[in-house]
Picture 1 (cartoon, rainbow, N blue to C red):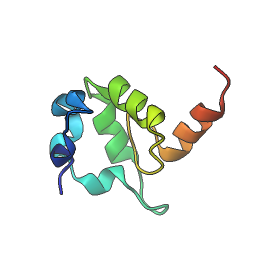
Picture 2: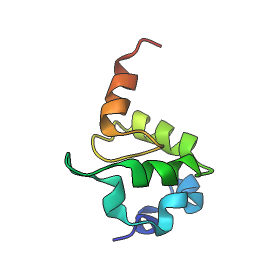
Picture 3: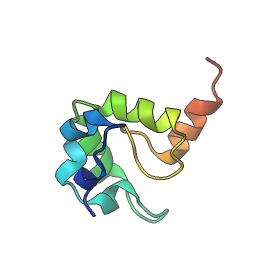
Picture 4: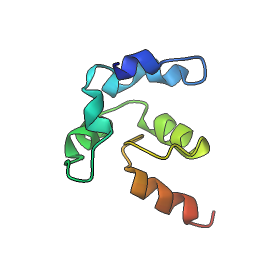
Length: 81
């Protein structure tokens, strides 16, 4: 499955995501994998803010979303607003 297959009505911004044609494995690295390939794609993405907001709102537990790893997102969620 490609990330472009994940486009749906809940995430209309995903149609513009830079990761649509990237290898999905980059965005779900194992602890031994280097996440930098995915993070480079996210850096140039026009909808990375929307992607990160969605991942935080829906509490996505795994993968790289909006240029942030799962660990970074967990830290963000713990911060007081």
